[in-house]
Length: 242
Image 1 (tube, rainbow, N blue to C red):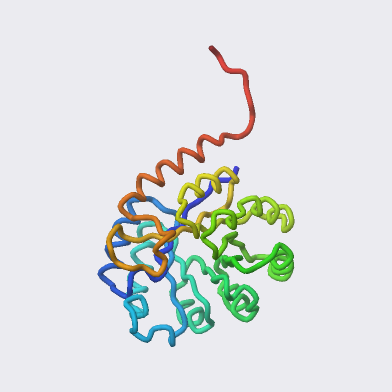
Image 2: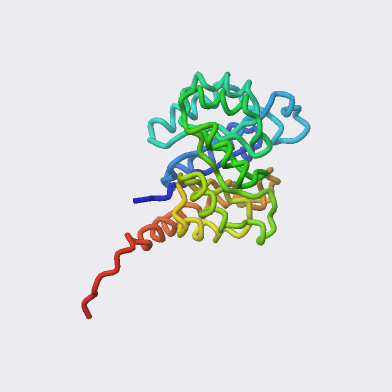
């Protein structure tokens, strides 16, 4: 029986501010998400030219990892470079997410898989054939169907079933649209995990702004999503009493 699980992506939306990161975690933990991830890019990205280009110290991620472990929430890191994988493999994190632009970077994929943690590969730039070949090459690799485009006709949720049939394993869905109701559709397709970005409901600019879900409403949304999961049932139609 497939029970879709929810992973909240803070990404870079903490804006390089450890206090904001803590505030976001305070909203996320009571919502009972399955996992939480942050994004850590290559060192040259953090040039302090913008708030989200400020890096947090390693110790802040260490404290976050320890706290989430106590709360029994999975902790993951989304990245695009080998250095981050080497550095943060010491934390014994629960999962990696390799972002779409690195879909064809076998070196990064092999490095992440060697840590013996779950590795999710975002497929925003990949075709069905590309995904099939990757699944044959790396048996333990997990895939996230998503699209960089925010155009509704490019979401292409029907691809989920086609990918699943082709590679003979379940896949996840990554929300990159401001139409958050797409999550309900992904639940109905019984995806493995649903990855979605989060932010605060304020006037600040967040790197993942348009498609991020407001933290203030997240707890209620997850309760609704979990009820939708229950509503799917087991598919067996039985006679009901009047």
